[in-house]
Length: 456
Image 1 (cartoon, helix red, strand yellow):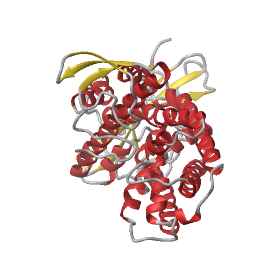
Image 2: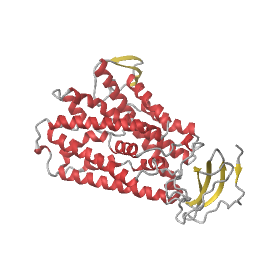
Image 3: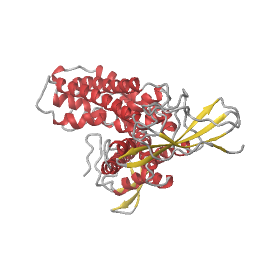
């Protein structure tokens, strides 16, 4: 088919303001009744002109005709077309399509809201008391859901994005509404924080995988790089810590986790949704087995006081679990148009909070957790627990961590690409490969376990 371009005069690249977007360039490619409409929108942000480029699909036009949006609403809305989808011509080469349904998004958000912090909650209830912990969870639920919706509202206020038809990542929102220095700072902090989380998750997942291999086969292997170069064979697990001690190693568990995570990091967010559904199913299974196990034990209400003065750990162990707000824009960009943001955000936040409270209360009543041990260490030390309960202690870290590593890599790549910081190959190196190199180099300096995650 021959390319056709609009004969309409160019309206220019200057927009009068954020609420009055102009169509700077329009072109269509005719193809069997399906038109590819390319739109470049201009809007003002921190005193300079920015362009958001998107592709939409317009149907029901006869071949050889031009397809244009009929108007732009006063609120920066889209054209009169009811359904607008990202084209596979360019968008899906760098970003995913709008294919994430309700349950896929629900699984993604619940997995982001839960995670390694889940196994520390019974001890938090015992140390801080019932009412302070419950109040903090309710506060975390409300803040996370409200902040997520307000962030979506900010996304919708970008010109042409009233119906979330444009591609708007977290840092583009900052770029539009805040000064230039705030945009650069937010981009650096976002990439750095997600990279550190991935490094910690990689180390913990590799350690757990090595311990799982020992439990299953009585052996795990590694190439020790420092202090003594050579191959090592370890037969004794160390749940929550590396079975190789403080040595720099490339272990079999590390390679298994690498093979599971890196390919998914190169895909788009919507390609990872099936993994999120599997992870949520595994999380549900772990919680069901653990609650049943703890419920079969004598429950001592004295284990959880009504309130204590030791509330310092509440902020680090509770609120950090609701820090999934920065992942919301990437999900919104790829969710189906009929998926409700409010229903998804509030539903997933409530489900995650319910998991925390049920496991925390039942586990807190049933267990006597000593020192700074977490749930996994307590399960490992209690030989009378069911074998299935002990198996779940190995499955949980992998479900909670391995499936989150590609998600954070994808979000880093999305933000780098959307802001044209680097090319896609370079963004993949920074987002996908760099955390694995840092995990090897910083193995002895990054102290990660489910008892505590610190950067030393």
